[in-house]
Length: 541
Ligand SMILES: [Ca+2]
Ligand SMILES: [Ca+2]
Ligand SMILES: [Ca+2]
Image: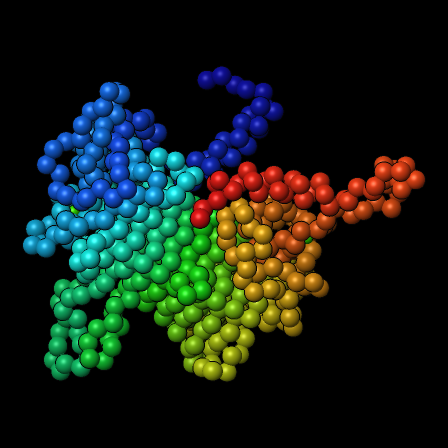
């Protein structure tokens, strides 16, 4: 093996690290080459059980297919699935309403029969639109479809789609079920108004002697996956995984209103929830992670989701820990523990704003913004806790952090944090505790043309401004604004833009020269405008 000069080795290592972090986002584990291209043309191709294969066009390896179901049937027949993937192309703005219901129940739950009910993907595919910068294609469940939309047991990259009206009746995964071999990446897509529901012979407390036997969980309102899942520039809203049954409104399972994941979960530049757009579940209103290798969330806003435990997320024993960076967790609700985050295991939270989450538990000591249970350490830097309320029903006692059980919460501060109370144990010399008013604005777009996420701006005089630590500060904020602005990074997900300081001894702006002084803001504004234009095409709608 050739040795390299030490300097090159060092550079290579840095590049490999950078490539590794990029590669982890959305790329399949095994690089596949393009096999067949499958064109599904038309504004609303009718769903039907495939009877003929797709038709070869004059272009090699390019076929036309009657509908999405027939395209998937062709893709599943891929003879070289470890080498090639099929690319299914839908027209921009087209709607694909699934109507071939499995009314006779010929396809068992979680079985693979692509001819009826859910679309079953068993070989690598990309499903996208003709132009992923233009309007999305919609895949939806028709009236009475009573099935999820997609069941995947392969590599699947889904781009520029709207997945809606998935009807996970008595099954996991309202829009998508990812099986053990699924590697799913979703970008620039919307998953909204899907549900997973529970049924089975539950023990109804209203019926004496009732015993439960078989149960179907009904988890993952939009997505249930046993394989790694990557989501970027997407929105997940109004998905539900809470089933209320019986005479006493017995609330049965449903974990993960939007996402139930049991493998590595990576989310970036996305919005989960929103005012009037809550995802809802028993545990993990937006996200339920269990047995996962790791969870990484960055530049993502999770707001207004509802649950019993973990309004935004319920994280159970991530073996490699969970990391949340440059994100906003706001206005989520839980009736038992952790209106924002409920976590068992190690979690690292950096430059994140956790604000206005509401817990309505009467039990003492539980956290509303961040609640820990059982084991684990929460390592935090530059994170802002403001006005997470709860613990005593109706009293609105501030409790940003806490723990379920007798022992207290375990926190390791890396500095630069801010809290409106002292419950988060932020004891580094650079932390601020018991701040009377963090002075943050309401959730708003705040000129964010990068990913469209809503954030809490820092208002004039906010004690979060320039009070983070520089050492652990990311290069940008949640809106992709460069950090730091001014001398030092701000606390939380939002960096307040500071105009370049006007120099009092500027040599090029003399009024005596007869030219109008140049507004020092103009170059910056022009640059921002150009960036905005460049990014507008990439912005999810
Ligand atoms: Ca199926
Ligand atoms: Ca099926
Ligand atoms: Ca700053």
